[in-house]
Length: 193
Length: 193
Image (cartoon, rainbow over all chains, first blue to last red; front, side):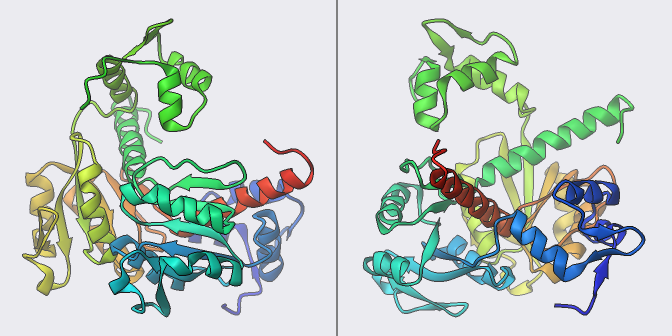
């Protein structure tokens, strides 16, 4: 936390590389948070944005699969805010149980259900090979998880009531490639933006 | 490649967990690709989708940063199709130069500019710590890259003409948490979907 009390849409725009007018417009959609010529009170703005994003309570996350990607995400935990935290990591490889990644002690899979309940975990992250992903999803669902973030390159079947998002690296690259081509076409036609 | 010649919107819907009517509607937006009662010719559909997504030529990708995330992405290369390929990996740590990850030999940073030109690389992926990311982006830009996919938790400044996307793990988790809360509210109000 820094000591800044108020922030202008111009400051926010500079930091986020966004149009200040768009920031004012977007925030105004949810109510009058700022004061003209003064800006936004930082702590009030944070509280309001948390409410808008439904983040005004803490969400606990579990991770299954501590290969390269799982380790990267566990290390990324440091950047997550206090209301969103990876609190447990699991791996099917017995040799990995007991190892520590960024303060998380890797647990064996047979502890998943009890840990999800005991630690009130509502989101499960899957970073296992594609062939293992559905089995892990089933275990998360049986444990009572409400959301799954799947990094395995496969489509998961989950029941109604379990929100499942696919973090798709290929889609990220394809999307970038698509907009690059659009930029190049726009430049070619003099429609540079 | 499998031997399937045609595919119905129903088959596609089952595989992708999407509504077949929506698939028909989305594809019809770009023209008449399918035949009623027969379905879509698979190779023609693939060709058309490539054109729509502007992927009818090969795009070469370079990666900087071979920590856990960089290694995970390099391994993921196997899942990328032939028209989107990571062909070079770099690391600032001299000790990593010469090591091999999934057929990619890690190169030192001073080879980046020449390799980007020689291999016709148009996308750069950044998986270095936040403090190093801008420097890497600057090197990519100087080498003539057209798109950057940034996994470092920091906002990059890049010039006009270089499309920059941020692969944001926190945003993925926040988005999932948001929709989970919406689902729970909808269930509470009997508006289950």
